[in-house]
Length: 134
Image 1: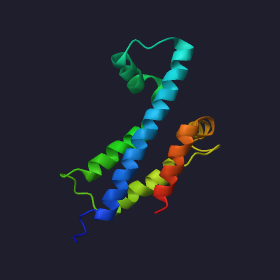
Image 2: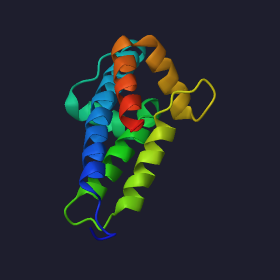
Image 3: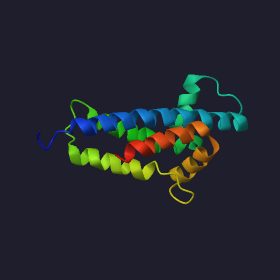
Image 4: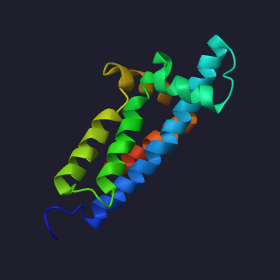
């Protein structure tokens, strides 16, 4: 295998991680939307919601996950020149970012709160941790 190629094992691991991150992102988005609507009233549909997700500070912390998904997608793309070092770096980054902490980055602290308050988010967090232990 050439050094430029991501191994099949790493490719599978990154694909599984990407899928779990997307699920977690959806759960967190739903949670944040409910909180936003509780404070500000109903959001008038998918277009306005997308605009809020992209530009409103209330949702900004979730960009950590969406950015990671995009980086994984880019690494796994057929046109990508990413190799094992890049795959390993993405996994290391995920291990750091997806670690809920009472005292950490803004994302980690908010994520910690979400994990503590939502059984569904906690279950996915456990799946993410198990996957990243490999």
